[in-house]
Length: 288
Image (cartoon, rainbow, N blue to C red):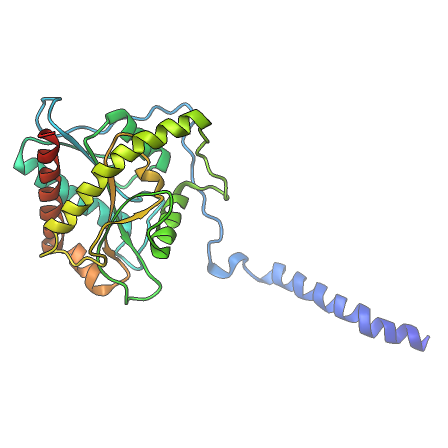
């Protein structure tokens, strides 16, 4: 009898205490303790038609087309803490660039989104494939674990990033349309992959040229974190035959960068330099 009581105290009593704790937690606690652990995203219907955005500028279809992609949007706010969110900032920068290009004349411009809507990466890619722009530019604003990181960076596509920071940034952006860890994008066949690689090499050279022009035109007015173009495997840049860059305009986690990008002067400097670079790039292409 004594041994049974000892066994009960050593084994049964702790189990009973644990069961009581679980019961109390479920009865009087609240799920998540105030944190939202589940993010619900409404997937678009499989048969939804992708509407093309309006093209502004000259009605002449032979004029060059620039497709501007404001990163994030809708239920995907992107980086940022407090009132300033990446999705709002990128849209404002995209609109400033659009207006600057239209003011100079001779260039058609479209935005992948002109309001606060959610677009999957596949939808952004599909818009570029359908519209076949002469330039595709995706605008973002990164965030770091502290406020020390600052400055803008211009990225082009590569299979591997030019450094660890580029790889991590690309991985974070590419996960924007990963639902429960499952990628929605399919895989192409071996032949298609080879053809895709060849076409992207030609586009890559043009993308690097555009990136260098942005760095040159913005040297006096935009604080760049990297003085040369960087590269990473951004899914949104995988556009055959389309020169494409991702312009990380600054760190929204850095107070100085955030204030600069949120100000009319900062947006103007971004738009001026980028518009000049795009015009210089298009002028070079027209002579070839």
